[in-house]
Image 1: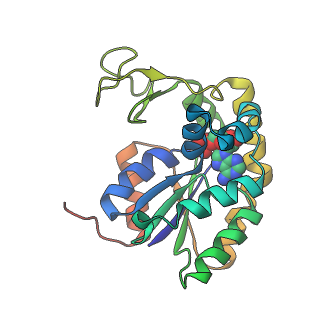
Image 2: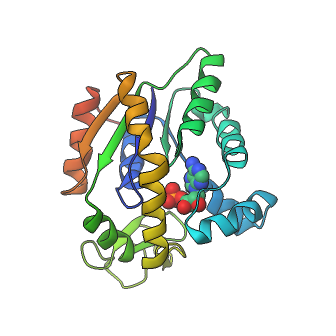
Length: 219
Ligand code: AMP
């Protein structure tokens, strides 16, 4: 199964993708994580992306499309993927469709996780992430047991450099201008599923599974 998760920054794409990946046995490809890994390794790709990420802008399509299309040819993607944060504009969606078509595959569903702007701001400004396992926390709604430490692996929690109010507002503008047209793009071909993204993590996950009409794996 080939799934795209659509949603504004803070909509919970990463959180839901992590659960869905396990339940549906799919590979999780998060374009933002690929850029952050490249940045922390100091590679050419990381350097190309850095300034755009800091400003809350999209990294140019030629860089992003190549990075993601290369990644989805890896063996772990053969049984299907969940794309989180890609595509983020119509050009990326078309490039993805063409690449999958060449492999006689295609996107099955695009899940749009809908969250109000006020809630997005609240979530992102209080978000803390584990530096090692990427588990997300929120300083008010889901704090870690020990301040600054991950409950799962004990590693240090950090706030993303682009999770500050000024950059968050720019990222939301970019979402509504460039990514929101993908809602229509996938709706026109009958692939869009819209899910209410507020409530508990488990409830949102259950809504997605129900909307996809798939069975959870028990192991
Ligand atoms: P995310 O972790 O998905 O919020 O992405 C963090 C940042 O990485 C974004 O604000 C962009 O600068 C960059 N980025 C991630 N995915 C894409 C994409 N599909 N197209 C362009 N830039 C991206």
